[in-house]
Length: 116
Length: 145
Ligand SMILES: Nc1ncnc2c1ncn2[C@@H]1O[C@H](COP(=O)(O)OP(=O)(O)O)[C@@H](O)[C@H]1O
Ligand SMILES: [Mg+2]
View (cartoon, rainbow over the protein chains, first blue to last red):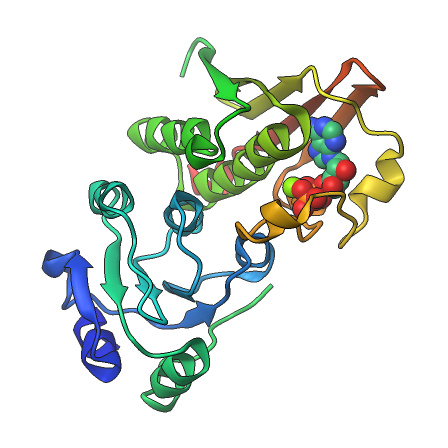
């Protein structure tokens, strides 16, 4: 799935990474616990989360993720968006709740990928 | 790499917002060196977990990273409270992190086991009341070079 399609499925605003919208991602994971993302994620390119702090972006960086989707109308700070931009991570913000956002992406064909 | 490259970072223990900044820097450096993505990822995750631990559990510390042709050595040293029972601390899910840390997305008790899993060697030296030093090594797999 292209990052562009994720944005459109979720009616999400693109906060940074416009140049990546046509990049393909294969799978996603949804979590508010960065500890779990670091422990269980294998090659998911997209992180869906309701947690807002710079560690979310750093976690995505460490896991080589391409895109972070903030749900529940959470808005990252400009510093977080800058950090993501600098490291080539697209940031989307959606009003959907976590369950709904993950459900829409899964139904749209974005799978679990390989977990640990 | 003929000689050993050395990187040193001070990890601020008063500032959760900046926790992980050293790991980000190391990741950038390893990419510049042209190491393979999987090795970089293992180093990054292990160091990031260790850096977060120093901030959350030990009021900060220092990080030293050495890179030579065989691999990457990460030494995380703090002057925190020490770890009373290493076997217990190594168990998945064991955590003494306070609720405010959990609200920030950490404190699932997966850090130390994760660090062990992503590295080839890991050693914990700890003295109660004096501090903890975690030494981790990731070998560069010949097939990945
Ligand atoms: N540098 C450290 N100094 C003191 N205690 C530590 C340190 N690192 C880890 N610990 C102890 O080991 C426990 C387990 O660590 P970890 O597996 O990373 O889980 P978490 O950080 O989520 O609590 C921590 O809750 C803490 O009690
Ligand atoms: Mg930890």
